[in-house]
Amino acid sequence: MKKLLFIVSVLLISLSSFTALHKFYVSVTQIEYNQEQKSLQIISRIFIDDIEEVLRKRYDETIELVSETEETKVDQYLAKYLNQKLTITVNGEEMIFNFIGKEYDNDLVLCYLEVENVPPLKTITISNQALMDFFDEQQNIIHVKKGKKRKSLILEKEKDKGMLKFSE
Image (cartoon, rainbow, N blue to C red; front, side):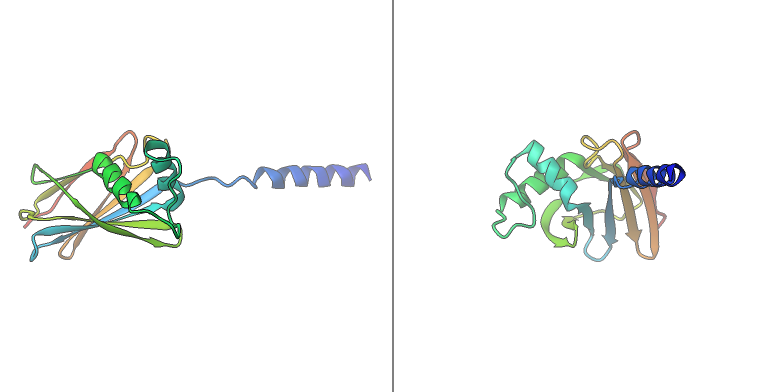
């Protein structure tokens, strides 16, 4: 009986130690160079609960994403935050992006951004510090597509900036 009780105790302790979920902090940003429109079309995917926590701490404790009474200030806060945390430089010239809008997809918020009047893309430097000041484990994955070429970066707190080169 003592042996059975011991086994059950060890089993319960082992199982309970795995019940705490490990949170994975990641965002994915896709950048596509549209040569005809001379623009960068950008979609940044961020977990709703992570960005909501950041917006609450930075701007408004009462803010709720995915709310039926969601106010337009959510878009304003998202645009402001992304403008502070995301920089894009093309061929050595810093670009200004426009926040087009957002939509929700399950547990993600998809932020749509666009850079207009982009010169022919030779090099692109991206700094994405989104959520890094709140989550030490945050990784921001960047995919850049020019024509049929696709290149990627993984940005972290210690290395939040990277350059990709595209040949003509």
